[in-house]
Structure formats: structure tokens, C-alpha cells
Image (tube, rainbow, N blue to C red; front, side, top):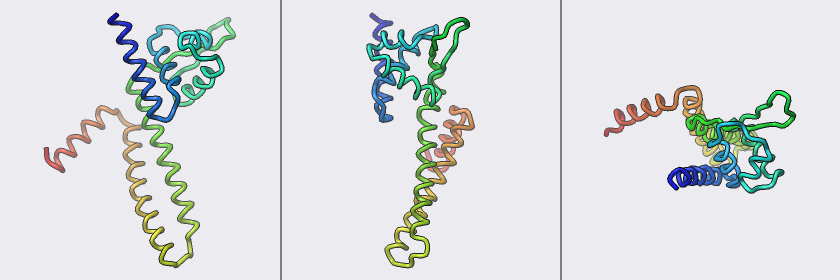
Length: 173
């Protein structure tokens, strides 16, 4: 029971993580199935193991592959595609979390700049208030972008240790 229960706990964790990111739990279960397998699995094998349809599994695998959590493998002499999970949890978090934040920050910047352009030349009091809020949001967004890029370009453990040291030094322990 110990090994199976441990696997179930991890599978639920991946399913809950998928939900937190606005995805169906299927994405987490697929990743979990692949995470525990030593050998790459076919689409059909994944569908059988998760109990989901081939079409749902196929759609989910495309997204998981696009965000770098799953790798597609071709075996010599076999036309089928096989899949394996990127098993480094740090890489999983990096791809699933920081890349999503990076994309959100980029979209936020683009939308704020578009909104700013819309009120360009408008000298009304309301336009000035909106402009101030947008400029403040752009400043915060730029800081967030720098922080996310630091995490993406450096070893996460080193960044977290340096961040903790800096915060403790600046804000007190």
C-alpha cells in the first residue's frame, strides 16, 4: 500500500497544480502517469492508464509538450509517437509557473501600453488619473518582469537563497 499511496498523493498533487493554473485535472494526471514511468508511453497507453479518451489525452499532451513538461519521442521503425515527462521537479515548476507568469507579464505590458496610447492627447482629469494608474502599473510590471527573468536565467535555489539573504538583511530577521 505504501508505494501506491505515495503515487496517488503525487498524482493528486499534479492534478491540483493543473487546477490551480486553470487547467483540467487531466493535465496533471497525464503528467503524473508519465512521471512514474521509466519508459516513454504511447498515446493509447496513457489514455488507458488515465481512463480518459484518446482525443482528450492527445489535446492535453500537445499543451504539455508546448510548455515543455512532456517530450515527444520517436522510436526507430515505429510510426507511433511516444511521450515522457520531464522529471526534474525544478524544471517542471520553472516551465509551468515562471513561464506562465512571464507570459502574463508580457501581455499585461502590451495591454497597458495599448490603453495608454488610447488616452494619448486626452487632457481631461479622468484621462490623467487613468494615465497615472497605468504608469504605476507599468512600473510594477517592469519590476515583476525583471524578477521573473532572474528566476528563468539563473539557478532557482541560488536565486531563492540570495533573495532570502537580501530580504533578511534589508528588512531584519
